Length: 358
Image 1 (cartoon, rainbow, N blue to C red):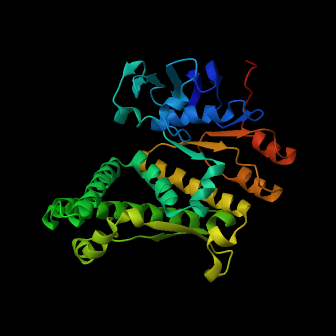
Image 2 (tube, rainbow, N blue to C red):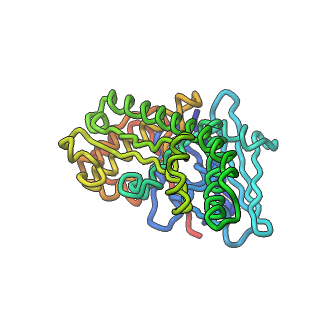
Image 3 (cartoon, one colour):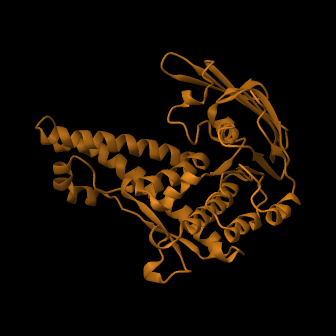
């Protein structure tokens, strides 16, 4: 499966423009602020119904319009046409999902196309807070596992209600018995979330360990779960009551990136790797993500690489260009980095796209 073309109408800086793509590697070439990342964002929208960069969906609509349309033709068994319409209403965005120009449910629409995106900001998965790492993992799982999506939604709702109740109990406006229902929901959904996270981390580590590229095979991920049970919630009740928050459960989970290139006591990429090594660690994670998405959905996701060559030296650029995947690839860059490396890439097929003058 691959994307044959893309049409944007009033999406970000693109008012009305169409692109044709190759099944292999597509390089989106142009200066900064020319709309390159907007193209990747549109492709990601078609696979997830959301943006990887906007805080609000309304930001994706061109300033001169209240409506945006994104559509593409995909080559699969049915050569389906996919489309999303974003309509700015009164304080909210209405999304419409189309398959072959017929309205469909969001769930069915999201089964048509999968994507994996790699951006410079993703380095925060290594260097950032545990919440950033959980966010990355949740984003992967909710897109391929509807049971996880539902459990995460239920868990977050129960967690919010429990924390609010703790405040009310401390103020004498509620009693402890009212926690029972929410505690049961936390335990049930929390254990499923932990199991699913443990499963994906196990898959990632197995994939990385057996990868033919040495740098990738040196990477591993250490999962640091915070378990939840009725007993743990009961034992931490006094502490939770004082703090007004729940101290056990997957909202406290973390995972760390490690490399066997470094001594065991100093193998955390967040502290002992160069920025270039950290970015390659993220790319290794993304390759494992591609394999996991393919396993769960039985389709190869498209790979969106946004400005991945910045801050990488010549050796590490070559590592990226030598990575093998059967996914359709989209790369944004301001210039072709090193001729001898790009010549290797050109053998696979490249379509260079530049934004026309406005």
